[in-house]
Length: 513
Ligand code: GLC
Image (cartoon, rainbow, N blue to C red; front, side, top):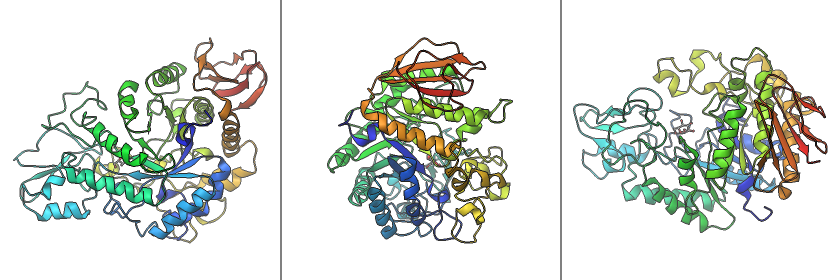
């Protein structure tokens, strides 16, 4: 374990740049804001940070609509700010990975503007996916609701799996390959430790753009839209570039698949280093579900990853609390799930604010919502703004210390967040923040001695019990307290420590007897 590359067992903290910390005082997070909070992140005990897109963008999708792949949007700072952030992160012992968005550009990207200005059939149009026809070329719908095709005045349609402002590239065109190899080198030359690849299973579409079969078929794997075999050639090209740089540069793919076997295809030895494993994040609070996910993952994937929340999904403590009569159940379960996830082999991805126990903000005023999903679905889907509300740093400052100025944060923060701020929690040993710090420190101290394999022990219904070297991890997803196995002491508990029994919605790390 000791000599394995950093990413294999790293804890990576996702920073949604708009919502982390605002140094410029305009109500929107920025790179200098992140820089000012590096001591906090180093103190939290994570190994790396992942920054969501900060490149120039019209922000039709919070920056996932990139207009210039080699710059920094003025909202977030400058390239010099980025260079300073990389240097400071490294000085704090933190690796830094950046998002790369290769499935689509912004419609403001010079290539798409050139395509609009050029006639049908031109080389400019061939860098995107244009088709003729009176009707849309097929039945695909956008992941953000509504059709996936938009028609131009000249009669051609272009494909956008997301918003119309996010036209999909044509990866069957070699120029697109060359462009992205160069983009990777641009950021690698600036010292980034790796990339998170947006919509990594989407780059190639079925060559004939066949219709999606009627529902009931697997959505995420093996559809004409996703996971075409040709996509793997892209990651083989990218892997060669990453490997040509010193210092274990790594790539993690945003890959949504139906099975762990399909996921494993992306992390073959000459492709991506890692892929997000969204199965747990999609699972209910259930020991049976968790066990199956853990088993399937560890069988199929040699470099496993775990994640409970990110900027695209309802925060996990809110998900886990749904349907429960106990107001605190979601938070208790979230803390327990963290212990289970961090006991497993592989690396873990945390999402900003989960260490504060932030819930999803479900009652944002409609006029403040900015996720294109909200508008495109006519308000039927709330979208993802509720997990993107800016972080509360202090209790009584304007915007809870998120912004250095008087500007309102780009999304309003709930009044109850004063008590959830970093300042409120930092000195309280019972807080969720203190719990995260303790478990991350403990994991770091144990990790050199923990093997890559786990062993299951028999346990009562609705519980999980496994060992990993010296560690025993128990998690109770049921309604009743259960007895703990013989052990040599509690290392950490997600709830009230108890030597002999494990309360519902609680997990514990024990030393082997
Ligand atoms: C990914 C991102 C999401 C974005 C989408 C389109 O799923 O995580 O935030 O909206 O891609 O780029």
